Length: 159
Image 1 (cartoon, rainbow, N blue to C red):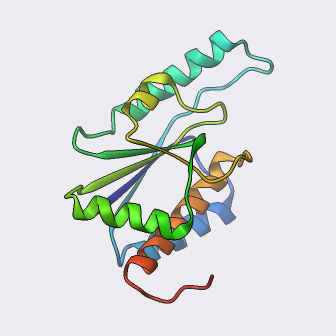
Image 2: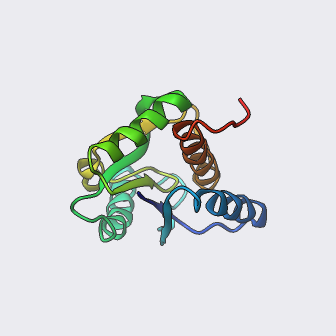
């Protein structure tokens, strides 16, 4: 299985890059992992909805370039479905059983994802109704994917 994370913006903080590196290394035992960073647009203070939509659209065009036709796309959205770790593991396992060879997780920028990206989504996933920094979400998502593979393989992992 190939897992691809498409994310908006670069990780600037060393501690987050280190955590991403650690989970990437751990995941290499279970899947082929690819992390793609697309450039983010500067969002002016108190931007209008029209300006924000334009920004989401530009970032969305960059994201869509990397999505292959046969990929299963999971977007991270506040309004998405919240799953327990075991349910995410089951979702990943079922996609593999159904013959899906690539799962693409998409984390938008600070103002979310554009309409065209949301249309491409096969599944909207939410980690919480709370808002997290999108850079931190990469670490949280990678940890949960790693936890999923531990669950799928019936390997111990702290609860």
